[in-house]
Length: 622
Image 1 (tube, rainbow, N blue to C red):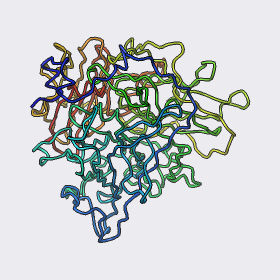
Image 2 (image 1 turned 60 degrees about the vertical axis):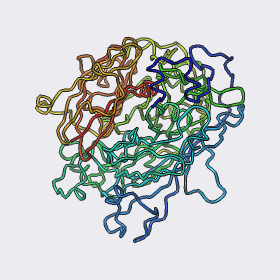
Image 3 (image 1 turned 90 degrees about the vertical axis):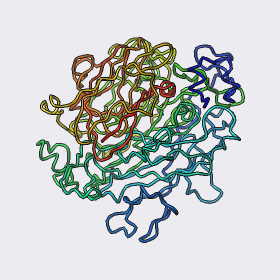
Image 4 (image 1 turned 90 degrees about the horizontal axis):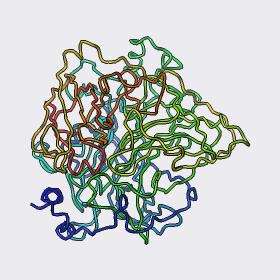
Protein backbone atom coordinates (compact mmCIF):
# COMPACT_ATOMS: atom_id res chain seq x y z
CA UNK A 1 0.00 0.00 0.00
CA UNK A 2 1.38 3.42 -0.96
CA UNK A 3 0.55 5.86 1.79
CA UNK A 4 2.10 9.21 2.60
CA UNK A 5 4.75 7.74 4.93
CA UNK A 6 5.91 5.33 2.22
CA UNK A 7 6.17 8.21 -0.22
CA UNK A 8 8.50 10.11 2.09
CA UNK A 9 10.52 7.00 2.93
CA UNK A 10 10.99 6.29 -0.78
CA UNK A 11 12.11 9.85 -1.40
CA UNK A 12 9.40 10.54 -3.99
CA UNK A 13 8.87 14.12 -2.85
CA UNK A 14 8.71 15.51 -6.35
CA UNK A 15 5.74 13.35 -7.31
CA UNK A 16 4.05 12.98 -3.92
CA UNK A 17 1.37 15.53 -4.73
CA UNK A 18 0.22 13.55 -7.74
CA UNK A 19 0.47 10.20 -6.00
CA UNK A 20 -1.55 11.24 -2.97
CA UNK A 21 -4.03 13.60 -4.54
CA UNK A 22 -2.78 16.40 -2.26
CA UNK A 23 -2.44 19.90 -3.68
CA UNK A 24 0.94 21.55 -3.67
CA UNK A 25 0.30 24.49 -1.35
CA UNK A 26 2.55 27.48 -0.73
CA UNK A 27 4.93 27.06 2.16
CA UNK A 28 3.86 29.00 5.23
CA UNK A 29 7.18 29.02 7.06
CA UNK A 30 10.77 28.91 5.90
CA UNK A 31 10.06 29.89 2.29
CA UNK A 32 6.61 31.42 1.85
CA UNK A 33 5.73 32.10 -1.79
CA UNK A 34 3.27 34.93 -1.11
CA UNK A 35 3.42 38.08 1.07
CA UNK A 36 2.22 37.60 4.60
CA UNK A 37 -1.38 38.73 5.05
CA UNK A 38 -1.55 41.68 7.48
CA UNK A 39 -4.52 41.60 9.85
CA UNK A 40 -5.33 44.31 12.41
CA UNK A 41 -4.98 42.84 15.91
CA UNK A 42 -7.57 43.07 18.67
CA UNK A 43 -10.59 43.74 16.51
CA UNK A 44 -12.53 40.63 17.54
CA UNK A 45 -13.68 39.34 20.94
CA UNK A 46 -12.31 36.09 22.35
CA UNK A 47 -14.75 33.27 21.46
CA UNK A 48 -16.15 30.96 24.13
CA UNK A 49 -17.35 27.66 22.66
CA UNK A 50 -20.12 26.51 25.05
CA UNK A 51 -20.72 23.06 26.50
CA UNK A 52 -22.54 20.45 24.43
CA UNK A 53 -26.13 19.64 25.34
CA UNK A 54 -26.50 16.49 27.40
CA UNK A 55 -28.82 13.88 25.94
CA UNK A 56 -31.87 13.12 28.11
CA UNK A 57 -31.34 9.94 30.13
CA UNK A 58 -34.19 8.59 32.23
CA UNK A 59 -34.16 5.27 34.15
CA UNK A 60 -34.50 2.40 31.70
CA UNK A 61 -34.12 4.65 28.66
CA UNK A 62 -30.51 4.85 27.43
CA UNK A 63 -30.46 7.66 24.83
CA UNK A 64 -27.94 6.14 22.35
CA UNK A 65 -29.29 3.32 20.19
CA UNK A 66 -26.86 0.47 19.60
CA UNK A 67 -24.49 1.45 22.40
CA UNK A 68 -21.07 -0.20 22.01
CA UNK A 69 -20.58 -3.35 24.09
CA UNK A 70 -17.37 -2.09 25.72
CA UNK A 71 -19.23 0.97 27.03
CA UNK A 72 -22.16 -0.93 28.59
CA UNK A 73 -20.29 -2.01 31.78
CA UNK A 74 -20.05 1.68 32.71
CA UNK A 75 -23.78 2.35 32.24
CA UNK A 76 -26.42 1.49 34.84
CA UNK A 77 -29.69 1.83 32.92
CA UNK A 78 -31.66 1.87 36.20
CA UNK A 79 -29.50 4.74 37.56
CA UNK A 80 -29.45 3.10 41.01
CA UNK A 81 -25.62 3.01 40.95
CA UNK A 82 -25.12 6.33 39.21
CA UNK A 83 -26.11 8.39 36.20
CA UNK A 84 -23.74 8.69 33.26
CA UNK A 85 -23.81 11.75 31.01
CA UNK A 86 -24.49 11.05 27.31
CA UNK A 87 -23.38 13.32 24.44
CA UNK A 88 -23.19 13.35 20.63
CA UNK A 89 -20.34 15.13 18.87
CA UNK A 90 -20.22 15.44 15.09
CA UNK A 91 -17.12 15.92 12.91
CA UNK A 92 -18.22 18.13 10.03
CA UNK A 93 -17.23 20.60 7.34
CA UNK A 94 -18.25 24.16 8.16
CA UNK A 95 -17.15 27.74 7.55
CA UNK A 96 -16.12 30.12 10.35
CA UNK A 97 -14.67 33.60 10.69
CA UNK A 98 -11.14 33.64 12.11
CA UNK A 99 -10.92 37.44 11.88
CA UNK A 100 -13.31 40.20 10.83
CA UNK A 101 -10.94 41.16 7.99
CA UNK A 102 -10.92 37.61 6.59
CA UNK A 103 -13.59 35.90 4.48
CA UNK A 104 -15.18 32.86 6.08
CA UNK A 105 -12.82 29.87 6.10
CA UNK A 106 -13.81 26.27 5.50
CA UNK A 107 -12.63 23.97 8.29
CA UNK A 108 -13.17 20.51 9.68
CA UNK A 109 -14.50 20.82 13.20
CA UNK A 110 -16.41 19.18 16.03
CA UNK A 111 -19.95 20.36 16.73
CA UNK A 112 -22.70 19.56 19.22
CA UNK A 113 -24.78 16.76 17.73
CA UNK A 114 -27.73 17.67 19.94
CA UNK A 115 -28.33 21.19 18.65
CA UNK A 116 -31.93 22.28 18.06
CA UNK A 117 -33.18 21.92 14.48
CA UNK A 118 -31.93 24.71 12.25
CA UNK A 119 -29.13 25.78 14.62
CA UNK A 120 -25.49 25.43 13.55
CA UNK A 121 -22.19 25.44 15.41
CA UNK A 122 -20.38 28.69 14.60
CA UNK A 123 -17.10 28.20 16.45
CA UNK A 124 -13.70 27.10 15.17
CA UNK A 125 -13.23 24.86 18.24
CA UNK A 126 -15.47 22.02 19.30
CA UNK A 127 -17.80 22.18 22.32
CA UNK A 128 -16.19 22.77 25.73
CA UNK A 129 -17.16 19.93 28.06
CA UNK A 130 -17.53 20.87 31.74
CA UNK A 131 -17.95 17.64 33.66
CA UNK A 132 -17.72 16.80 37.38
CA UNK A 133 -15.37 14.16 38.68
CA UNK A 134 -17.34 10.91 38.87
CA UNK A 135 -18.28 9.42 42.23
CA UNK A 136 -18.81 5.88 40.88
CA UNK A 137 -17.81 4.00 37.70
CA UNK A 138 -21.42 4.53 36.58
CA UNK A 139 -21.47 8.33 36.73
CA UNK A 140 -18.88 9.23 34.10
CA UNK A 141 -19.31 10.43 30.53
CA UNK A 142 -20.16 8.65 27.27
CA UNK A 143 -19.56 10.48 24.00
CA UNK A 144 -20.69 9.19 20.61
CA UNK A 145 -18.51 10.73 17.92
CA UNK A 146 -20.14 10.74 14.47
CA UNK A 147 -18.21 11.35 11.26
CA UNK A 148 -19.87 13.69 8.74
CA UNK A 149 -16.64 14.61 6.95
CA UNK A 150 -16.39 13.96 3.20
CA UNK A 151 -16.02 10.43 1.93
CA UNK A 152 -12.60 9.27 0.76
CA UNK A 153 -13.81 9.64 -2.83
CA UNK A 154 -15.11 13.20 -2.37
CA UNK A 155 -12.27 14.49 -0.19
CA UNK A 156 -10.21 17.37 -1.63
CA UNK A 157 -7.10 18.98 -0.14
CA UNK A 158 -4.98 18.01 2.83
CA UNK A 159 -6.11 15.91 5.77
CA UNK A 160 -7.66 12.46 6.16
CA UNK A 161 -11.47 12.27 6.59
CA UNK A 162 -11.24 8.97 8.46
CA UNK A 163 -10.79 9.76 12.15
CA UNK A 164 -10.22 8.57 15.69
CA UNK A 165 -10.54 10.80 18.77
CA UNK A 166 -7.99 11.03 21.59
CA UNK A 167 -9.01 12.42 25.00
CA UNK A 168 -5.64 13.95 25.85
CA UNK A 169 -4.80 13.56 29.54
CA UNK A 170 -7.66 11.18 30.32
CA UNK A 171 -7.62 7.94 32.34
CA UNK A 172 -9.95 5.52 30.56
CA UNK A 173 -10.08 2.13 28.79
CA UNK A 174 -7.64 1.64 25.92
CA UNK A 175 -10.42 1.23 23.38
CA UNK A 176 -11.67 4.72 24.26
CA UNK A 177 -8.25 6.34 23.90
CA UNK A 178 -8.34 7.14 20.20
CA UNK A 179 -5.77 4.56 19.10
CA UNK A 180 -4.29 5.81 15.82
CA UNK A 181 -4.97 2.72 13.71
CA UNK A 182 -7.33 -0.26 13.63
CA UNK A 183 -5.84 -3.21 15.49
CA UNK A 184 -6.97 -6.68 16.61
CA UNK A 185 -5.43 -5.82 19.99
CA UNK A 186 -8.49 -3.62 20.61
CA UNK A 187 -11.04 -5.85 18.95
CA UNK A 188 -10.47 -4.55 15.44
CA UNK A 189 -11.97 -1.29 14.19
CA UNK A 190 -11.37 1.89 16.22
CA UNK A 191 -11.20 4.41 13.35
CA UNK A 192 -14.35 5.54 11.57
CA UNK A 193 -15.19 7.18 8.25
CA UNK A 194 -18.14 9.15 6.88
CA UNK A 195 -21.55 8.11 8.28
CA UNK A 196 -19.86 5.89 10.87
CA UNK A 197 -19.60 6.50 14.62
CA UNK A 198 -17.66 5.36 17.66
CA UNK A 199 -18.72 5.31 21.33
CA UNK A 200 -16.14 6.50 23.88
CA UNK A 201 -16.45 6.09 27.64
CA UNK A 202 -14.63 8.39 30.07
CA UNK A 203 -15.12 7.16 33.67
CA UNK A 204 -13.56 10.39 35.10
CA UNK A 205 -12.47 8.53 38.23
CA UNK A 206 -9.34 8.91 40.31
CA UNK A 207 -6.73 6.30 39.31
CA UNK A 208 -7.21 3.08 41.28
CA UNK A 209 -10.95 3.69 41.71
CA UNK A 210 -12.50 0.92 39.62
CA UNK A 211 -13.40 -1.28 42.61
CA UNK A 212 -17.05 -1.78 41.67
CA UNK A 213 -16.27 -2.96 38.14
CA UNK A 214 -13.26 -5.11 39.07
CA UNK A 215 -14.79 -6.69 42.17
CA UNK A 216 -11.93 -5.36 44.30
CA UNK A 217 -12.95 -3.67 47.54
CA UNK A 218 -9.41 -2.60 48.55
CA UNK A 219 -9.36 1.22 48.34
CA UNK A 220 -6.53 2.42 46.10
CA UNK A 221 -8.00 5.71 44.98
CA UNK A 222 -5.42 8.44 44.40
CA UNK A 223 -7.07 11.85 44.76
CA UNK A 224 -3.88 13.73 43.84
CA UNK A 225 -4.01 12.67 40.18
CA UNK A 226 -7.34 14.21 39.27
CA UNK A 227 -7.67 15.55 35.74
CA UNK A 228 -8.44 19.21 35.30
CA UNK A 229 -7.86 20.70 31.86
CA UNK A 230 -8.11 18.01 29.19
CA UNK A 231 -8.64 18.35 25.46
CA UNK A 232 -9.84 16.09 22.69
CA UNK A 233 -8.45 15.97 19.17
CA UNK A 234 -8.07 13.81 16.10
CA UNK A 235 -5.39 11.11 16.38
CA UNK A 236 -5.41 9.26 13.05
CA UNK A 237 -2.12 7.67 12.00
CA UNK A 238 0.01 9.84 9.65
CA UNK A 239 -2.54 12.68 9.44
CA UNK A 240 -3.02 13.97 12.99
CA UNK A 241 -1.17 17.22 12.21
CA UNK A 242 -3.29 17.98 9.17
CA UNK A 243 -6.60 17.09 10.81
CA UNK A 244 -5.91 19.07 14.00
CA UNK A 245 -4.73 22.02 11.90
CA UNK A 246 -8.00 21.86 9.94
CA UNK A 247 -9.88 22.27 13.23
CA UNK A 248 -10.54 18.92 14.96
CA UNK A 249 -9.92 19.94 18.59
CA UNK A 250 -11.86 21.02 21.70
CA UNK A 251 -11.62 21.40 25.49
CA UNK A 252 -12.78 18.91 28.10
CA UNK A 253 -12.72 20.37 31.63
CA UNK A 254 -13.14 18.21 34.75
CA UNK A 255 -14.09 19.57 38.17
CA UNK A 256 -14.16 18.15 41.68
CA UNK A 257 -17.72 17.37 42.68
CA UNK A 258 -17.41 19.82 45.53
CA UNK A 259 -21.05 19.78 46.60
CA UNK A 260 -20.41 16.44 48.32
CA UNK A 261 -17.73 15.67 50.93
CA UNK A 262 -14.89 13.68 49.36
CA UNK A 263 -13.72 10.89 51.71
CA UNK A 264 -10.66 10.04 49.60
CA UNK A 265 -9.39 13.61 49.51
CA UNK A 266 -10.27 14.17 53.17
CA UNK A 267 -8.19 11.09 54.06
CA UNK A 268 -5.31 12.39 51.92
CA UNK A 269 -5.41 15.75 53.70
CA UNK A 270 -5.39 13.99 57.06
CA UNK A 271 -2.54 11.66 56.04
CA UNK A 272 -0.25 14.48 55.00
CA UNK A 273 -1.29 16.67 57.92
CA UNK A 274 -2.22 19.66 55.81
CA UNK A 275 -5.60 21.14 56.67
CA UNK A 276 -4.71 24.38 54.86
CA UNK A 277 -6.03 22.81 51.66
CA UNK A 278 -9.58 23.53 52.73
CA UNK A 279 -11.73 26.08 54.53
CA UNK A 280 -13.31 23.32 56.64
CA UNK A 281 -12.49 19.72 57.49
CA UNK A 282 -15.81 18.57 56.03
CA UNK A 283 -15.15 20.15 52.63
CA UNK A 284 -11.44 19.56 51.96
CA UNK A 285 -11.67 20.06 48.20
CA UNK A 286 -13.12 23.57 48.25
CA UNK A 287 -10.22 25.82 47.40
CA UNK A 288 -12.39 28.77 46.34
CA UNK A 289 -10.34 29.36 43.22
CA UNK A 290 -12.03 31.36 40.46
CA UNK A 291 -15.16 29.43 39.44
CA UNK A 292 -15.86 28.44 43.04
CA UNK A 293 -17.78 31.62 43.76
CA UNK A 294 -20.81 30.49 45.74
CA UNK A 295 -21.12 31.48 49.38
CA UNK A 296 -20.27 27.97 50.62
CA UNK A 297 -17.35 27.62 48.19
CA UNK A 298 -18.97 24.78 46.27
CA UNK A 299 -18.41 24.15 42.57
CA UNK A 300 -20.22 26.64 40.36
CA UNK A 301 -18.45 26.84 37.01
CA UNK A 302 -18.63 30.31 35.51
CA UNK A 303 -16.69 30.83 32.30
CA UNK A 304 -16.73 34.55 33.02
CA UNK A 305 -13.89 34.07 35.50
CA UNK A 306 -12.52 30.63 34.54
CA UNK A 307 -11.47 30.73 30.91
CA UNK A 308 -9.87 28.00 28.78
CA UNK A 309 -7.65 29.42 26.04
CA UNK A 310 -5.99 27.39 23.29
CA UNK A 311 -3.11 29.08 21.45
CA UNK A 312 -2.62 28.04 17.82
CA UNK A 313 -1.17 29.27 14.54
CA UNK A 314 -2.60 29.24 11.05
CA UNK A 315 -1.79 30.64 7.63
CA UNK A 316 -4.54 32.00 5.38
CA UNK A 317 -4.58 32.28 1.60
CA UNK A 318 -5.92 35.18 -0.46
CA UNK A 319 -9.52 33.95 -0.14
CA UNK A 320 -9.28 33.16 3.55
CA UNK A 321 -8.56 29.48 2.94
CA UNK A 322 -6.27 27.51 5.25
CA UNK A 323 -2.78 27.00 3.86
CA UNK A 324 -0.68 24.05 4.96
CA UNK A 325 2.62 22.64 3.71
CA UNK A 326 2.12 18.86 3.36
CA UNK A 327 5.84 18.32 2.77
CA UNK A 328 6.98 19.94 6.01
CA UNK A 329 8.43 17.24 8.25
CA UNK A 330 10.19 19.66 10.60
CA UNK A 331 7.07 21.18 12.13
CA UNK A 332 4.56 23.64 10.67
CA UNK A 333 4.65 27.26 11.86
CA UNK A 334 1.69 29.41 10.86
CA UNK A 335 1.74 33.13 10.15
CA UNK A 336 -1.11 34.23 12.43
CA UNK A 337 -1.52 33.69 16.17
CA UNK A 338 -4.98 32.53 17.26
CA UNK A 339 -6.60 32.19 20.67
CA UNK A 340 -9.75 30.03 20.82
CA UNK A 341 -9.93 30.14 17.03
CA UNK A 342 -9.69 33.92 16.59
CA UNK A 343 -6.68 35.88 15.34
CA UNK A 344 -5.28 38.06 18.18
CA UNK A 345 -8.60 38.70 19.96
CA UNK A 346 -9.42 40.92 22.91
CA UNK A 347 -11.06 40.02 26.23
CA UNK A 348 -12.86 42.51 28.51
CA UNK A 349 -12.11 41.71 32.17
CA UNK A 350 -13.17 43.06 35.54
CA UNK A 351 -10.58 44.12 38.09
CA UNK A 352 -10.60 40.86 40.05
CA UNK A 353 -8.98 37.39 39.87
CA UNK A 354 -9.39 35.22 36.78
CA UNK A 355 -8.31 31.63 36.18
CA UNK A 356 -6.91 31.02 32.69
CA UNK A 357 -6.38 27.48 31.39
CA UNK A 358 -3.75 27.76 28.66
CA UNK A 359 -3.31 24.99 26.12
CA UNK A 360 -0.75 24.95 23.33
CA UNK A 361 -2.69 23.49 20.42
CA UNK A 362 -0.12 24.51 17.80
CA UNK A 363 1.57 22.01 15.53
CA UNK A 364 5.17 23.02 16.28
CA UNK A 365 5.35 26.43 18.01
CA UNK A 366 6.58 26.66 21.61
CA UNK A 367 5.68 29.84 23.53
CA UNK A 368 7.14 31.87 26.38
CA UNK A 369 4.21 33.99 27.54
CA UNK A 370 4.48 37.24 29.48
CA UNK A 371 1.80 39.53 30.90
CA UNK A 372 2.80 43.02 29.74
CA UNK A 373 1.49 46.56 29.53
CA UNK A 374 1.49 48.68 26.37
CA UNK A 375 5.10 49.73 27.04
CA UNK A 376 6.33 46.14 27.34
CA UNK A 377 6.81 46.09 31.10
CA UNK A 378 6.01 42.61 32.40
CA UNK A 379 4.08 41.56 35.52
CA UNK A 380 3.94 38.28 37.44
CA UNK A 381 1.20 35.68 37.31
CA UNK A 382 0.33 32.85 39.72
CA UNK A 383 0.55 29.29 38.41
CA UNK A 384 -1.82 26.80 40.04
CA UNK A 385 -1.82 23.78 37.71
CA UNK A 386 -0.27 21.86 34.85
CA UNK A 387 -1.90 19.26 32.60
CA UNK A 388 -1.55 16.90 35.60
CA UNK A 389 -4.00 18.99 37.64
CA UNK A 390 -3.41 21.28 40.61
CA UNK A 391 0.13 21.86 41.83
CA UNK A 392 1.14 21.12 45.40
CA UNK A 393 1.42 24.84 45.94
CA UNK A 394 0.86 28.06 44.07
CA UNK A 395 3.85 29.67 42.33
CA UNK A 396 4.30 33.32 41.40
CA UNK A 397 6.05 33.39 38.02
CA UNK A 398 7.40 36.13 35.72
CA UNK A 399 6.48 34.12 32.59
CA UNK A 400 5.90 30.53 31.55
CA UNK A 401 6.93 28.17 28.77
CA UNK A 402 4.12 26.37 26.94
CA UNK A 403 5.09 23.51 24.65
CA UNK A 404 2.79 21.68 22.27
CA UNK A 405 -0.02 19.87 24.18
CA UNK A 406 1.07 21.26 27.56
CA UNK A 407 -1.50 22.98 29.75
CA UNK A 408 -0.69 25.65 32.30
CA UNK A 409 -3.28 27.24 34.59
CA UNK A 410 -2.57 30.80 35.68
CA UNK A 411 -4.45 33.15 37.98
CA UNK A 412 -4.16 36.83 37.08
CA UNK A 413 -5.42 39.36 39.61
CA UNK A 414 -6.51 42.39 37.60
CA UNK A 415 -7.37 44.27 40.80
CA UNK A 416 -3.61 44.82 41.14
CA UNK A 417 -3.75 47.19 38.14
CA UNK A 418 -5.40 50.45 39.26
CA UNK A 419 -7.52 52.78 37.18
CA UNK A 420 -6.72 54.99 35.28
CA UNK A 421 -3.04 53.98 34.96
CA UNK A 422 -3.98 50.66 33.39
CA UNK A 423 -6.66 50.26 30.76
CA UNK A 424 -5.20 47.32 28.88
CA UNK A 425 -2.71 44.48 29.30
CA UNK A 426 -1.43 41.91 26.82
CA UNK A 427 -0.22 38.34 26.59
CA UNK A 428 3.05 38.47 24.68
CA UNK A 429 5.15 35.63 23.26
CA UNK A 430 8.88 36.37 23.43
CA UNK A 431 10.37 32.97 22.64
CA UNK A 432 12.54 33.09 19.50
CA UNK A 433 11.65 30.30 17.04
CA UNK A 434 12.12 30.46 13.28
CA UNK A 435 11.42 26.87 12.18
CA UNK A 436 9.86 23.61 13.28
CA UNK A 437 13.02 22.31 14.93
CA UNK A 438 12.17 24.33 18.03
CA UNK A 439 13.15 27.57 19.77
CA UNK A 440 16.59 29.09 19.82
CA UNK A 441 18.65 28.27 22.88
CA UNK A 442 18.10 25.39 25.30
CA UNK A 443 15.33 24.32 27.64
CA UNK A 444 17.25 25.79 30.59
CA UNK A 445 18.22 28.99 28.73
CA UNK A 446 15.77 29.68 25.91
CA UNK A 447 16.50 32.69 23.71
CA UNK A 448 13.98 35.46 24.41
CA UNK A 449 13.36 38.61 22.39
CA UNK A 450 13.13 41.90 24.32
CA UNK A 451 9.68 42.34 22.78
CA UNK A 452 7.49 39.77 21.11
CA UNK A 453 4.10 39.32 19.47
CA UNK A 454 1.03 40.26 21.50
CA UNK A 455 -1.44 37.43 21.00
CA UNK A 456 -4.28 38.62 23.27
CA UNK A 457 -5.41 41.97 24.67
CA UNK A 458 -7.10 42.34 28.06
CA UNK A 459 -9.43 45.36 28.29
CA UNK A 460 -9.62 46.27 31.98
CA UNK A 461 -13.02 47.34 33.28
CA UNK A 462 -14.55 48.14 36.65
CA UNK A 463 -13.51 46.71 40.00
CA UNK A 464 -15.97 44.15 41.39
CA UNK A 465 -16.37 42.03 44.50
CA UNK A 466 -14.17 38.94 44.41
CA UNK A 467 -14.96 35.97 46.69
CA UNK A 468 -12.21 33.81 45.15
CA UNK A 469 -8.79 33.25 46.64
CA UNK A 470 -5.52 31.51 45.77
CA UNK A 471 -4.31 29.53 48.79
CA UNK A 472 -0.59 28.83 48.96
CA UNK A 473 -1.32 25.14 49.48
CA UNK A 474 -3.31 23.57 46.63
CA UNK A 475 -3.15 19.77 46.41
CA UNK A 476 0.03 18.61 48.17
CA UNK A 477 1.47 15.19 47.48
CA UNK A 478 4.69 13.50 48.49
CA UNK A 479 7.44 12.60 46.01
CA UNK A 480 7.79 8.94 45.11
CA UNK A 481 9.37 7.01 47.97
CA UNK A 482 13.04 6.06 47.64
CA UNK A 483 12.25 2.35 48.01
CA UNK A 484 9.80 2.52 45.10
CA UNK A 485 12.40 4.18 42.93
CA UNK A 486 15.16 1.74 43.87
CA UNK A 487 13.00 -1.26 42.96
CA UNK A 488 11.48 0.16 39.77
CA UNK A 489 12.45 -1.28 36.37
CA UNK A 490 14.27 1.23 34.15
CA UNK A 491 13.59 1.70 30.45
CA UNK A 492 15.62 3.93 28.14
CA UNK A 493 14.10 5.55 25.06
CA UNK A 494 16.64 7.19 22.77
CA UNK A 495 15.22 9.65 20.22
CA UNK A 496 17.42 10.30 17.17
CA UNK A 497 17.27 11.38 13.53
CA UNK A 498 19.03 9.15 11.00
CA UNK A 499 18.97 9.59 7.23
CA UNK A 500 16.09 12.04 7.54
CA UNK A 501 13.97 9.63 9.59
CA UNK A 502 13.07 9.50 13.27
CA UNK A 503 14.30 6.48 15.18
CA UNK A 504 13.63 5.31 18.72
CA UNK A 505 16.29 3.02 20.18
CA UNK A 506 17.77 2.63 16.72
CA UNK A 507 14.57 1.46 15.06
CA UNK A 508 12.57 3.52 12.58
CA UNK A 509 9.77 5.02 14.64
CA UNK A 510 6.09 4.54 13.95
CA UNK A 511 5.83 0.75 13.76
CA UNK A 512 2.77 0.10 15.92
CA UNK A 513 2.84 -3.59 15.13
CA UNK A 514 5.46 -4.17 17.83
CA UNK A 515 5.39 -3.00 21.47
CA UNK A 516 8.62 -1.37 22.66
CA UNK A 517 7.67 -1.91 26.31
CA UNK A 518 5.31 -4.12 28.33
CA UNK A 519 4.90 -2.55 31.79
CA UNK A 520 2.94 -4.44 34.45
CA UNK A 521 -0.23 -2.84 35.79
CA UNK A 522 0.24 -1.55 39.32
CA UNK A 523 4.05 -1.64 39.22
CA UNK A 524 5.85 1.68 38.80
CA UNK A 525 8.68 2.10 36.31
CA UNK A 526 11.37 4.66 35.54
CA UNK A 527 11.43 5.81 31.92
CA UNK A 528 14.37 7.79 30.59
CA UNK A 529 13.71 9.95 27.54
CA UNK A 530 17.01 10.83 25.82
CA UNK A 531 17.18 13.35 22.98
CA UNK A 532 20.17 12.78 20.67
CA UNK A 533 18.66 14.45 17.61
CA UNK A 534 20.85 17.58 17.70
CA UNK A 535 19.04 20.93 17.90
CA UNK A 536 15.53 19.47 17.71
CA UNK A 537 12.95 19.87 20.49
CA UNK A 538 10.49 17.07 21.29
CA UNK A 539 7.54 17.34 23.71
CA UNK A 540 6.91 13.68 24.58
CA UNK A 541 3.34 12.70 25.47
CA UNK A 542 2.63 9.38 27.23
CA UNK A 543 -0.96 8.15 27.10
CA UNK A 544 -3.04 6.82 30.03
CA UNK A 545 -1.14 8.04 33.14
CA UNK A 546 0.60 11.11 34.51
CA UNK A 547 4.37 11.18 34.94
CA UNK A 548 6.47 12.38 37.85
CA UNK A 549 9.73 14.02 36.78
CA UNK A 550 12.63 12.76 38.89
CA UNK A 551 15.64 14.20 37.07
CA UNK A 552 16.42 16.48 34.15
CA UNK A 553 19.93 16.18 32.78
CA UNK A 554 21.00 14.37 35.92
CA UNK A 555 19.67 16.98 38.33
CA UNK A 556 16.43 17.59 40.19
CA UNK A 557 14.20 19.88 38.08
CA UNK A 558 13.16 23.43 38.95
CA UNK A 559 11.35 23.36 42.30
CA UNK A 560 9.55 26.69 42.20
CA UNK A 561 12.11 28.60 44.27
CA UNK A 562 15.08 30.79 43.43
CA UNK A 563 15.80 31.97 39.90
CA UNK A 564 13.01 31.17 37.48
CA UNK A 565 13.78 31.35 33.77
CA UNK A 566 10.25 30.37 32.91
CA UNK A 567 10.71 26.66 32.22
CA UNK A 568 8.01 24.06 32.69
CA UNK A 569 6.99 23.32 36.27
CA UNK A 570 7.51 19.57 36.49
CA UNK A 571 9.33 18.42 39.64
CA UNK A 572 7.92 15.40 41.48
CA UNK A 573 6.24 16.55 44.68
CA UNK A 574 5.23 19.80 42.98
CA UNK A 575 3.60 18.81 39.67
CA UNK A 576 2.51 15.87 37.54
CA UNK A 577 2.76 15.82 33.77
CA UNK A 578 1.43 14.05 30.69
CA UNK A 579 3.84 15.86 28.32
CA UNK A 580 7.59 16.20 28.91
CA UNK A 581 9.65 18.71 26.94
CA UNK A 582 12.94 17.38 25.60
CA UNK A 583 15.11 20.31 24.66
CA UNK A 584 18.28 19.86 22.58
CA UNK A 585 20.41 17.04 24.03
CA UNK A 586 18.11 16.73 27.04
CA UNK A 587 17.66 13.64 29.18
CA UNK A 588 14.59 13.44 31.43
CA UNK A 589 13.86 10.67 33.94
CA UNK A 590 10.25 10.09 34.97
CA UNK A 591 8.38 7.69 37.24
CA UNK A 592 5.15 6.30 35.81
CA UNK A 593 2.72 3.70 37.14
CA UNK A 594 -0.06 2.32 34.95
CA UNK A 595 -3.26 1.39 36.78
CA UNK A 596 -6.80 0.18 36.10
CA UNK A 597 -6.66 -0.20 32.33
CA UNK A 598 -4.62 -2.70 30.34
CA UNK A 599 -4.04 -2.92 26.62
CA UNK A 600 -2.04 -1.14 23.93
CA UNK A 601 -1.17 2.55 24.24
CA UNK A 602 1.22 4.92 22.50
CA UNK A 603 3.72 7.61 23.39
CA UNK A 604 4.94 10.13 20.85
CA UNK A 605 6.35 13.55 20.14
CA UNK A 606 3.65 16.25 20.13
CA UNK A 607 5.35 18.30 17.49
CA UNK A 608 2.55 16.85 15.40
CA UNK A 609 4.54 16.69 12.17
CA UNK A 610 7.16 14.64 14.05
CA UNK A 611 4.38 12.38 15.33
CA UNK A 612 3.13 11.82 11.80
CA UNK A 613 6.63 11.15 10.40
CA UNK A 614 6.49 8.99 12.67
CA UNK A 615 7.92 9.65 16.13
CA UNK A 616 5.53 7.32 17.90
CA UNK A 617 5.84 3.96 19.63
CA UNK A 618 3.48 1.45 21.20
CA UNK A 619 3.59 0.01 24.72
CA UNK A 620 1.31 -2.68 26.17
CA UNK A 621 0.19 -2.62 29.79
CA UNK A 622 -0.14 -6.21 31.04
